[in-house]
Length: 337
Ligand code: PEP
Ligand code: MN
Image (cartoon, rainbow, N blue to C red; front, side):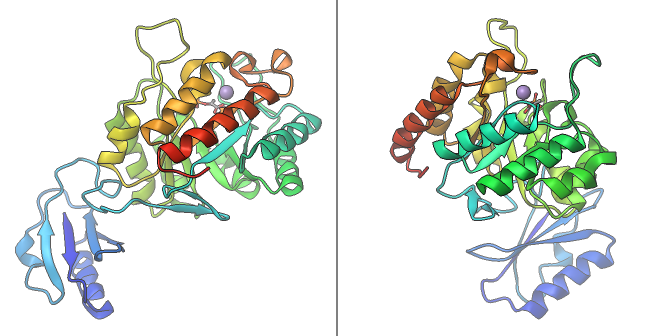
C-alpha cells in the first residue's frame, strides 16, 4: 500500500500520516520524490483499508501495490534512485566501472592493479578478501590482510573499494575497510546477512543468485531496504542455464526488466557472466547499450598466475581497450563515462 501526498503537503501532515500507520502496528517508509512525497506501508499481513487514510489532510491518493516487492518497486517510487558514492553516481546519467582482481592476492598485486584500473578510467577497485568458494579446499582469501591492502590501494589511488562481505560475523570488519558491501551470488538468499547490511549505513552491491529469478533478486533487495538501507545497486552476473559453452548465461534481459520494475540502479558483471576473458568486452558493451548503470570487470596484471578466475580476467591492455570502446558506446546510449 502506498499513500500519495499532495504536492504542497506540509511536514505536519506527512508526520500525521506516518503516526497513523504506526498506530496500526505497520511501518511507514517516507519516499521523497521530485513530483511528490509518498509513504509506503510495510508490515501489514492483509489489505490495509484505504478509508483509514484518504480523509487525512494532505493525502491525495491511496494505491494498492500489486507486486510482491514494495520498497524496491517503481510503483512505490517512480523516479530512479541515484546512489552517490564519494561523487560517483550510480543510477543517473553516468556509467561507473568497478574493476580489479577476483581476489586480493598480495600487497604488490593489488597496488599494481589499482594503478592500472585507475589510469584506464575506473573509479572503483574490486577484490575479494573473504572469498566464498565452491570448494573448501580453494583459496579463501587473505581476509583482514587483504582488506588492509585494499584500503591502502584506495588511499594511494583515490579509488573507492568494493569488496564482498561473506557473513554477519565479519560485517563490521569489512565495513571498516570498504566503501560498498558486495553480497555475492552465493549469498543472495542469506537473509540474515541481507538484514544486517540493511541496518548498516553503507551502499550495497547485491549480485543475482546463480539460479535466482529477477523477482527473487528484487525480493532479496527488499530485505535490505526494509531494514532501512535504501542504497542498493543490483548486479546481473549471469545465471545457470542448459548452455555449458560459457560459465554462465549473462541475462541482459534483466537490465531493462529491472529498470521497468524497480527504481534501483543495475550494473552488469560480464566476467562471471561469461567466464571467458575474450567474451567480456562484447558483453560489457552490450550491457551499456541495454541500459546498465555500470560494469564490474575482473582485471589482473598476470591472469595466467591468478589464484582465482584468471581465465576470465582481462590483462591491463585489454581492459584499456574495453574502456576506450565503452567511452565510445556510452554517448550513443545517452550516457557519460
Ligand atoms: C566475485 O565477484 O568475485 C564473485 C565471487 O562473484 P559472484 O558472487 O557473482 O560469483
Ligand atoms: Mn571472481
